[in-house]
Length: 195
Image (cartoon, rainbow, N blue to C red; front, side, top):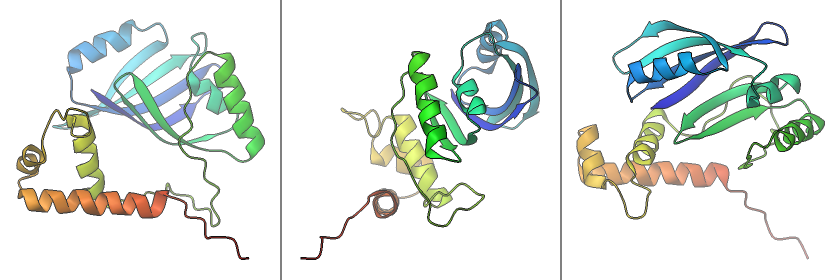
């Protein structure tokens, strides 16, 4: 099951309400597990689509949670996706001091944190920046979720092409374009120093 946090609302220091979408997996098993979790005070189904369900939960402060790390440091949650017993978070902080406070909280709480990117925007925007088109993002996400990037591969490019209803050649082009976009936008190339 994939869990994507849409929004987190805080109602005072002791009440946090996340809104999140779930897709895949067994919904009944998920709901039973969430309702039995001691950190969840209440779980409400807000909306249901063919492929996903939107929930709202009430979390309590008594259970240690990384959520409190970013609410206490004033960070803004831009994106959060849970998959395979790990979370990928994209957070925005007002200052490097706030980043350091967040790191300290995580370390003291025995969470494992792997920083994959620290970005200082030269032209801040109010929206989350993603260089990928929706098709490129869907392609890479399908590859990741189906085991295309595992060794050995759990699925093939041909199987993914069949899933999307396109030819193997078109699937290969999608992957190449998506990988090129990520490389152009994520890799920092430093020009050689002038002598």
